[in-house]
Image (cartoon, rainbow, N blue to C red; front, side, top):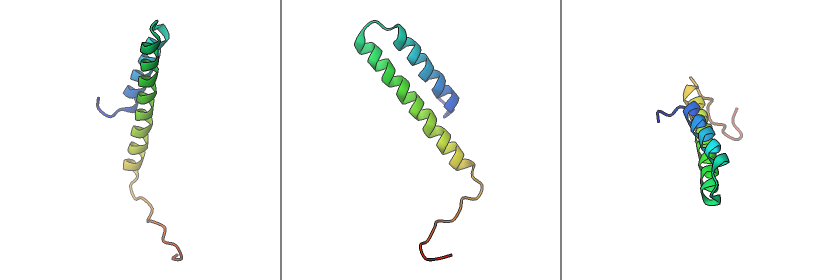
Length: 66
């Protein structure tokens, strides 16, 4: 995996599809959890990419100083 949120979302979708057709309750639950994990990873990667894309992040706020 290359750190691509789109790939993570594809894996999440595939796990959800497999969960939908799974007959064993344990397998269904495991696939649902895997799907959620892939989605969370996609969100975290998007956040990380957004932070890295910032050219000049704002300075930290110091209370009482302008």
